Length: 349
Image (cartoon, rainbow, N blue to C red; front, side, top):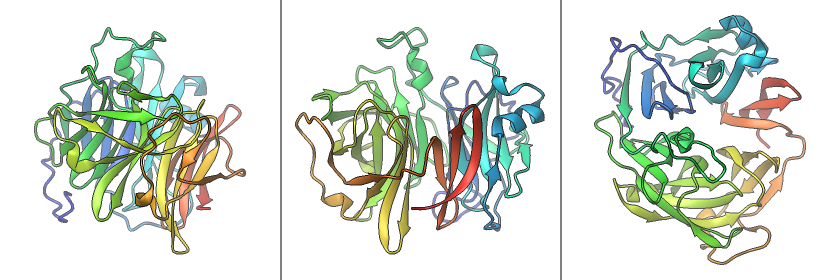
């Protein structure tokens, strides 16, 4: 599971009663290990799902996802939220983070959907798992300038890179924007690395805005984090620099437009060319040309529009809220259409 192919490295535990306080983000490590970020609980879980395929190769289509989830768990669709999803590359099955209810009384669970669209609940207690507590989450009483609790952004995204679980979000440090690179299998967590960036659209250095979404990306064989923030700067951050307590300057290689929040992104290869697909709150789905991605220099001045890595907007993809790869030529998209939320398989553009 650390990349060496050893399936025994995860220390199994089933005697812990798991009570998620949130399910902020989902991702997969090798060998079907599901990573669950519980931001409000300041903990990351690793579940050995045993879901190792083989993948069916069939597309997934689930219409009225919230309605089907509500029927499964015995409530009404208005009581259901779906914060994230992740496709298990080993099997092609999709895992879905679900909140039933609102606020502190909400129940949080993980569902699995197979290619037929059948939904089942993952038994969090009996599935072998380990977890690690974060040590630098924002203080419970801290709020941002809009009055929103900072603790809700303890974990904004997570992923697996170079034998480490990388966790983006906010910390309780002066430079609050943080990336925590936790060796996997888990040991004791340490402080994250504080991340500073130059935000060209704002014309200033920023240290307190959290990364909203990221992917692991190799540059000349070295793993880096390719991250995006609100108002859509695209930033490179080397994984090797993410040591506990470090202060790391990210390199902004693109400004993709303000008044926007990036929601999710994936990297893929099609017809011999590398691309990145990014879903956004207000700017649709962007297809970025990743050819020569390592050749873009840093943006270090205030800019009025967009600059850096070129992109096009995929007009036929509307309402996309989450993305993950589904095989080599397709992606699974969580799409909002009016009040409905659907899972649909799309061909990679």
